[in-house]
Length: 552
Picture 1: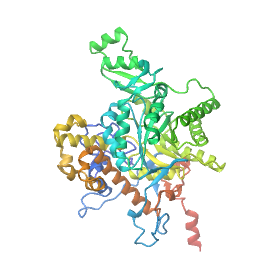
Picture 2: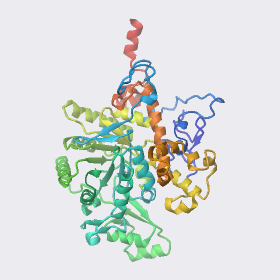
Picture 3: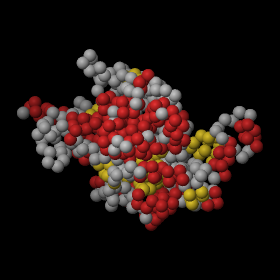
Picture 4: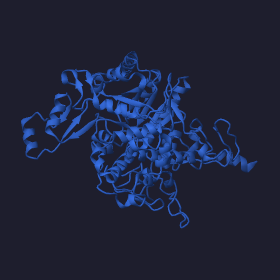
């Protein structure tokens, strides 16, 4: 028996450069990769990759013996032979109306002010990493054009050498100028059309230097503010790697934890002689002054009240893969505070700087964490609570992942959060743009001097390469698309494939709107997964009703 994702997929004609992990992505995803995993190729050819290659020459069969252990890949999607629920407007249960393009993927989240979203997807937090900075235009513009929320992660202001912080120290100063944060917000808002949102995240340093105050004063209700408890990749806060002694000293003087300490003479000597080649900048742990659950709750409620007093009418929380007590606190406190969204991130991905063995060994895996989130939300709901809307994160890249996670968390889960999966089209598009237009290579951070064979098999120019190009051009205009980075076009193309795949899966389950998806639409492929998730085993689902049919 083998796992679902091996190194190559002959049916789709895809291949992972490195080892494939649970999400189908390579364990190590490179910005300069020349292909061609499923997500990479989907960013060019779009929904074509929903189907096996070489139609008319082949037959294809799935490997249904790969459901080992407890993971999202050990959940399967239910299909039904009759019925149709959730058709919108004037559509009827006629076979002419019950077609997959009529499945609605629109959703919303929030309490007093609903945020509309075109498909149940959002980005992970893209913060102070250089990857996020270099490819931000692709991520932000792509997300805005798709109509989904995009999250600006932690420490963006603190690591920006051009930002102005009173006193120069993140531990005591307040922001007077934040050009990188402004760039990120304004890039998204340039194409925002009422669907999606730009979310700005706060960690310890961001809270101290007044990111929330700066954002609300300059952008008002255009931004959502997000409190952060952690993420699925690590439990010690965010970090980046820098290779400049001067920049390391700047970050040290700003008040960050920098390892090794660049102010020490022996460290400077080691760097000059080449023994030390880089420095790691770390954030601080939050809530270290709190010792009991009641203290955490009081502090949390005070933080939310303060943000509301500033003028934020939409507040969210991002939590990581801590244990069950912290999960219960996140759901309960977010519900009581009437937050707009709670993102729950399971172990263990990341954007390139999380300690490797921490990612391998720390925290609760996504499916276990998300199954418990549903259980705990149901307890609150049974008490009459209006449970906070939730987003699940942690190892998602494909359309079946989106469906399964929405079903596992139904009816509380409104969105699925993708990190690495939505960064790949940004990398790919930038590489293609830099190869096709060498004069833009440095500007877009392209890594290729020429188009590789895997791309040339698809096309030579943007309108040939990206299946979503012409649809997007019709949406924003043939002149305007010239201003859109190729990475955003690739992201738009990938989202179209994910959306179409979701529509097909939902139509097969006879659910034509997202609010109709329930836990009845999935089943467990092994007994261990059934026990851990509460999702019935394949042989048990509808078994009693089947026997009634036989005995009728």
